[in-house]
Image (cartoon, rainbow, N blue to C red; front, side):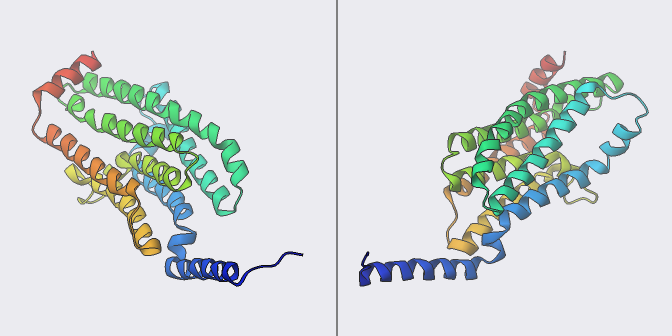
Amino acid sequence: MSVTSPQSVGNLSGTIAGRVAKTKRGGFWDTYFYFAMSLLIPVVVVYGFSRTMGPRIIHPTTTPPTILYIHAFVFYGWLAFFIFQSALIRTHNVKLHRATGWFGAALGVVIPVLGIWTAITMNRIRITANPQSGAALFMLVPFWDIVCFTTTFALAIYWRKKPEYHRRLILIASCALTAAGWGRFPGSFFQGPFFYAGVDFLILLGAVRDWIVSRSVHPVYRYALPAFIAGQGFVIFTIITNQAYWLKIANAILR
C-alpha cells in the first residue's frame, strides 16, 4: 500500500488545475489549431490553383510536360499526408504518426527536387512561347519558396523528437508552399508584390495561437517569420528592380 504525501497531492492538483486553466484559455486554439491549419492550407492551395491551373491540366490546349503532373501529384500528396498526420496527433495515435513519418520525410526530400525541376521546365516553355514574358526574373519566387520549405522541413526532421519544435516547423514548411496559391487569388491584395502576405498570415496565426494559449510566442515563430519576411522582401526587390545579376544567373540556368 502506497502513501501519498500532502505535498505530492498538492503538486498534482496544481498541475491539473494548470492544464484546466490552459484548456479554458486556449479552447479551440489549443486543441484543434494544428488540425484546422492542415485543412486550411490545402483549401488555400486548391482554390488558388483551381483558378488558373485546373482547366489547363484537365482540358489543356497543348499537352503539359509530364513533370507538371508528377509535381502536382507529389505536392498534393504532401498536403494529404499533412492532414493525415495532424489527424493522428489529434486522435492521440502518436505511434502511428511516428511510424508513418518517414514516408512524409521521403516526400519532403522529393519536393525540393521536383519544385526546382518543374520551375525550370515551365519557365523554359514560357520563354520559348514569349521571350519577353519575364519568366527568368520571376523564377526567383519558386526558388525562394523551395529554400524556405527545405530549411524548415530539414529542421523539423532534426528536431523530430521535440514535438513543440517539430510541429511548428512542419506547419511553417507547409505554409511556405502556399505562395503560388495566394498569388492566384482574385482581387489585388494578394497579387503583384503582396502575395507573400498570405504566407506570412498563415505563419502569424501560429504565433497568435501560442500567445492565446501560453501568453508567449515560441522561438520557432520568432525566428522563422522575420527570416521569411526578410527573404520575401529581397525577392520582391530583386524582381521589381530587374537586378541584372539575377537575370544573368536565371538565364544561365534556363539555357
